[in-house]
Length: 377
Image (cartoon, rainbow, N blue to C red; front, top):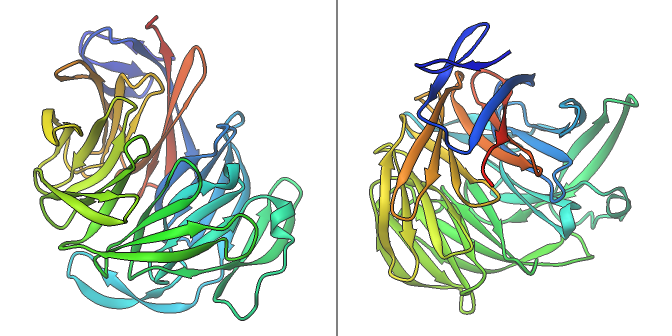
């Protein structure tokens, strides 16, 4: 049972977090889904029936059922030795190539494009059995994986092709017409542009490489205006790329350390700033910051509700899920929910009455699901 006190939201184990006022979202319950340490990012498929959790350290992807909250399948990569990067010391260390970082769906959810931290590229993880049966070109680079069907107890060996992009690929984004992929390569300081192929492995071809002045990460595609925005997390700039020429046409100066970028349908760009613990709303018509707010320490992944009125932010060292209501000219914090274990990834699932915020916790090895009742019209 969960109830609201004068100081915060309580359950039978104590305070979950602060609630600031009646916001339009009422927290009903929290659930803890056990997985394993090292979950880096999570994504719902296009119809919201399944969630995919990418485990960087475990080198696997778990497929969860949204309704039952149980793991249906585990896709485990066969590890091969490869140099890695220690982010704290910035030194090269022994590691493995098959460490999934971020992802993006294409082919109506049949393919999950996954960046592999030390493999220098991305791989199309085939989720549809009819596509999976196609023979791969053995002359092409590929990665071996094992798909374990946990319900039926069946384990299948598969081979997924790899497309070389750049050193330490991170975020992958897709244009709305399923024609192009955009990949940020942290280590090589480049952006890769891939043209998607619908039927022939490896299902994509690199067509352009864009150099950047600092380490790139977050990507937001503006399909309406044929632009792509990329945050240079290693600096204080967001670059705007023309999607017709695939060249940079604008440098936007912002606070330090932009990490994650998302867009609404009204031309607003929302950005988390890891170093200064802020979130901002940028108007893309003017490239100016309209408003910003302080978050808990090290905001990482951000997500919008379906009505684009609520912004969810995972705060890594703050161990919080911050939730803001988006007003015309300001952010209004409505929740600061405890989420121990260094929360990093978030995915939103909604129906007419409820909203679920799934949050993966990197060091704790579990996913927390916060369920809210929608009380707005």
